[in-house]
Image 1 (spheres, one colour):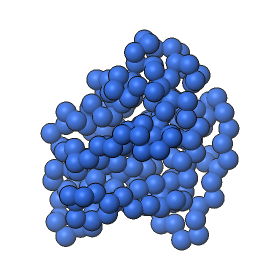
Image 2 (cartoon, helix red, strand yellow; image 1 turned 90 degrees about the vertical axis):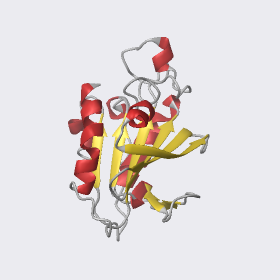
Image 3 (cartoon, helix red, strand yellow; image 1 turned 90 degrees about the horizontal axis):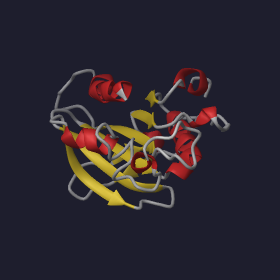
Length: 194
């Protein structure tokens, strides 16, 4: 989990280059989190409470001490601006944070543990620039680019590509480049070819 903790510390620097120029356009980080799941994933089992893939509140990658929601919720650099439960049949919870000093937002989706294949496939599609969408928040000024519309896409969770194959998505013809980060075990040899 230390790698994940360090990853959250470097996200603003990677995306923003340390700039706090108010004239910059809004930038978005979209994080795809496959909830830890002892039953449906090829993982070394974790304690039962941490490994229930349909319980984001206690899950290792979401609600536990260094889980995405908990860790960012305690950060002095990020402010929670929106939470939505049951986004669709795959995503149990979506949280949106605004960076305190820059024009950046972080949108994180908690995928059901048994939907890890969907989380990986949708992450890879977003990394290729596919499925660009806009997320409009009631109290925020501009809509946020998510999926293929994000500036940085991040995958957090078990390396599902160790257990199953997914087809590498072809990038959309006019997709602009974006940064990508994977926080999973042995990720480079599995994710880099995609």
